[in-house]
Image 1 (cartoon, one colour):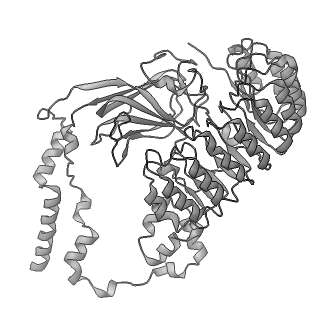
Image 2 (cartoon, rainbow, N blue to C red):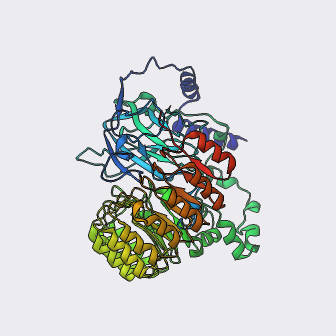
Image 3 (tube, helix red, strand yellow):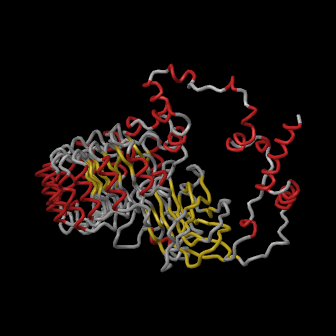
Length: 610
């Protein structure tokens, strides 16, 4: 009995040395619960708007203007408290689930954590580093997309960046759908952090929204002096404190363990078929799989089996991934087929050495590689990809806008490519023509906002000659495609199901190019003619007559389309799901309500400006 009391006293002493006395803990808790801060120094709160937009994953706007671009988030509000669709706001490229339903959308990766909702992001730099007390986001249209706010220890305006870049989540939640699209000031309760920051990151998910979310400004509030509450990690007395850690129990209670209860086997796990255990483990996320591998030799063997790593999405862990992380995974990924590194490696987290080592060891079986917003990439990295991934079929370089133009020449060596995303990259005409010459199996190609391609007519002609099995083509905001290039394209690529010609101002309906498009592409399911002012009734009627499988149509901004032609289209295309008639002057809200009542399965979009 004395020995047991001695053991208990020893454990209590260790607890007290680690957590402080019970009196200290209870006093601290009462002070916090009663809101007593009189003994703490009060710092003046600083309020500041974003100084600069540092990085983002996508935007609705052009690289050469300010309308609907992420750069509108810098500075004071342009629109708030007004509500509606304004060009002076920041707008992401997509909303809803329409894009996920298209043939060009890749299948989701397995093992993606249920708590990871982010689809887009933007990073903002502020003038002065502060300890955040509040973050306010001014949302002016269809709010509710923000799912995470993070702070970084890195000062983007400092000449001496830290060796260790830390990201801390200030707030996270699930995507929501507000009852109205009206403006709001979103100011969630944030977590206090122990470092000053002037770099915030907003992550969004617009999948539940009925239209594009629009952001006007972001306010960071904080104090320059470190709050005293952040200096002291308050000890909390909890029922779990009655038990101790494995290490402490092994030190103290070892001599008193009953040897009869020590088991060396793995119980019923030893009797389960290997394949069944593998199936059970396939439902775990990557961190859980890594933790389970440390539990026993049997589960370590299962958790390290390369069959568990045929698909690997590291995007949810972008803030923690490093060369060491890839090195740790390298031996397990010898059968890797699909890899998602999107958003990872920025600010020195990944290097050419770490990336090259991983790709050389794991790239042989790779068929899909997602590298969206990977700013660590350079020409040498692209050369490594072309050399180590001979069977690659899908490559996503979306928003890799810091990759120099020469780096894209290596893509032409990947002759089995079927899906290529180059949205917002600096690819030039020579490189894209070389790719189209050798990658003749392309099915999906995204050249949206590729402003360095000088002549899209030449690109269209090459596509028609070399890629006749093309299924989807995104030419969003290409500035120089003419009716001649479009005619060649649709005559040669008759398998097209998706075609995005949004904000292509050089196409004119008077040439008959849109009617020729409709007659040439009977399989068409998605057509975006966004902001083409010349689209008229005859174009809509030709679509109604020729494209009976149409599901998504965007004719935002035309003044020449009437309600009668739209009704004919809706009657002729029973599979239609999305019709955007925003800023169509002949289509007012009364017409939209009538058509929506007659065709309830179609989401007819009509934005407004207050």
